[in-house]
Image (tube, rainbow, N blue to C red; front, side):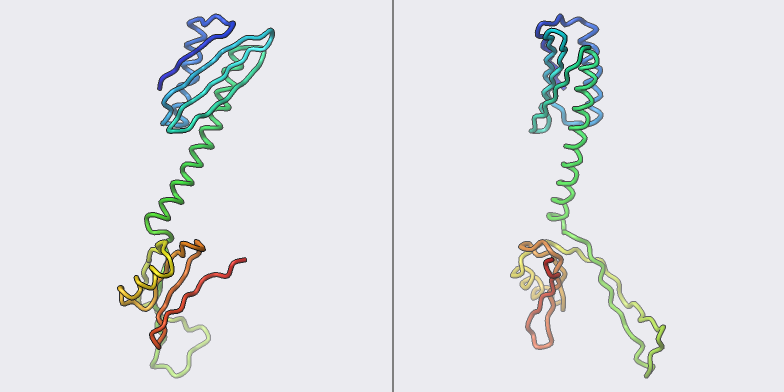
Length: 188
């Protein structure tokens, strides 16, 4: 992480520079991709201002804090930057997980095959069907045309997918007469 410190109407002493350096090292813990940091310390009458501009992973983050004490201004701007970097990191995680879900298979769906006992003529009220097979499938994002082609190629009777146009979970199945039917949730 490159740090440059500029002083306007203020003498940059070694303790002040080392204090800024130490505080900015805490930003490294909040966000690993900080590349370049530019700090401007300025004094105007009773106002002591600290401005920091960060170049991190293709994004520029800027914060400024002004008090009557330079050290308090530095602390304030570092707190603001920590909050901004944490918010940015959460946004990246959310975007990454959404993108990963879209690209790497979408939603995981559980599929169960059930059977009822054929030997009994009457079912008891508390009778539960037995599970023959339990499979977890990936509802990959695709268009309806792609889903029909995928279902024809797979030889299965149904396909669970995420419709790219509506971004809803959909089920495409083959009817007994060979035609296809699609089940989608109704838009509210």
